[in-house]
Image 1: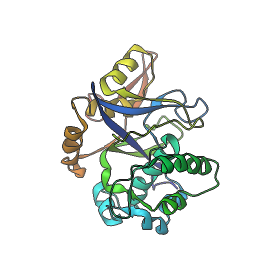
Image 2 (image 1 turned 135 degrees about the horizontal axis):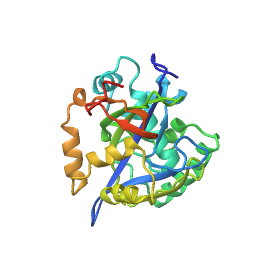
Image 3 (image 1 turned 90 degrees about the vertical axis):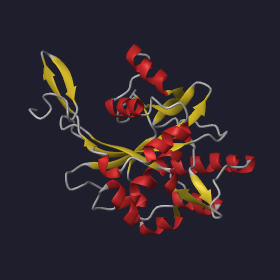
Length: 265
């Protein structure tokens, strides 16, 4: 699936939780052979065919396609961005952001947690579809627990370009998250400022969208204030950000919209 601009639609989910040291986020290290190999990113990936199948809407809760289009200011199918972010997050971390049929938050029992491990393995091995997992557990994706926060477009210097929608949600449940060992080779909860400082120190590697998303949530002491602040931002005020990269004096340099010289490139 490509957009009319030949961009690959993808989505990513910022998982945030409270800690004694403030807000933490869940980051994964991409496998060397994958896109963005070796860098630490939020869970996410491209929209797949199942994400766009009408029947999967039976397992959605909280947002309609019409509302999704309005939020993303998008003419094409938009609900799949929410669906893909939740599916990819489950595949890559084991976190399933869902509600039971009575609309209560899904916090797995000990037995359900064990079942989830097996179902996730089956999903990664192609033995079961995501909607079948939801059906088996009696769940619906909690789309309304995701807050849309940013939109990034891969620079034109790259041969493979994405249009990525970033979402934010809280995940304070006492549930162990683990990387899948396929697309992600390491993972951890880390303080927002700690992640930014580690990138500056060179102990982890972050790409620009991750850095800027972290910076945008760095001033909040708890997830309640963070979610409240991001929820009141009007979606029409969330621009598509397409960095421009170029070589200057033998070194790569990047500019963002609004920065001096951006329009001249």
